[in-house]
Amino acid sequence: MSTEDFTQDRLIEVEKLLEIELPNTSKKEKRDSVEGARVSPSQIEKLSYLYELHNRITNDIDFVHELTKIEPIEKEKALESARYSIYGTQMHQLQYFTQLFNRTEQLNRLPSKNDFLHTFPFRNSEYYKGLQHILDITDTHSNNISQSYWNEWRMNGQDFTPKRHKNYIINPSTIRDMWELGVIPLEDMDTFNMNKEKIDKEKLNPHNTMLLNETFSILNIFFNDCHLQVPTLIDEICIPNDFPNSPIRIIDYKTGSQFKEPEYKERIQIFLMMTSILVNMMDRVGSVQFKQSQWDITHNTHDLPFFTKRKLKDNLIGSVYFDQILDISDVFNKYFKFSYVNPLTQESIDININDIGIDIKDMLMYLNGITSFYIKYRNILKPKIDSNRSPYTLPSFPIKDFDKCNGFSNDIQLGLNL
Image (cartoon, rainbow, N blue to C red):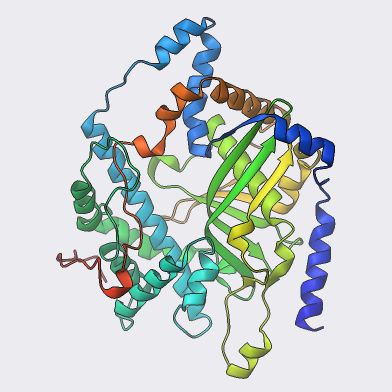
């Protein structure tokens, strides 16, 4: 069988799995007539508390008065939150880079710019140039190349200047000190290195699995009276070569106290992530290129799996009506596997929608209620959930002109057992 026939067969096979009615004209007219709200899963978690407060306070005047109370932010709590955020961000990247170097090592080479593109497919060109530049300055003769690469990324090319940020109380210079001087203890680095051998071998195999990190997608859910738009960033998606015989795996990396069985607000996030991937990616899975191309064979090289369809990052926007989700709820457990994974220990908590008591209808009614609630009190609620109003901001990568040697750190790097 040729590569083209193989890909076409996969497309047909996957398309048969999910037959969702496309919006018709009457539904489109209805869709255009309802008011909408754009809220991320983490913002929905913040809104949940206020929504439940609203349901307890029957008087609108009292509720608005409660909302407008100014809650002072304690600097020590903000600093502690910043440390946790930096720890989580750096640990996530350590996991991603470790996996990427392991996958390309199985192809007998170091990562290339295309590998960065295929692993982090929803970034701009400057991001890929930045990652390639980090590789150029990494000691590739190190005993632990992936960790050396991670440390160069940690120390170079980070932009600590807040963009569109309002009223931060933790100075960017403080964030930089915390970022560069290290929030991950040496014993945690040792623990990670000891446990990284436990990373699932199947997902590390580039011949059997496509691995995507930090997948960005937008999900539109249309209710009868409103429209919810949810931007999601998913830590990891693993698409197996033998899908649908094996499920697509969605992984959310959790560190510290966050690694636990999900509570109701976390179940909402899980539901939204799975729905977003269901709506946005099911019809694309068949276009994943696993086999070698003729160019690969001729030039004796190998690529990581990639989507053959162009401009994937421009098109990962999907829409669905709430009643359609009710009709396809069985797809979640049949074709998807969701897990929390602790990158420090590689322990996992596999989460089955039925096992954790997610009732799809109840969940949709709850989201409908939160959306209507947010639309009604948008002017008061938006400042309370706006990420640009958080007390600090983490760095972005890469800094402008990084590939022209801007953004290098001259600080002494801590010994991280490199």
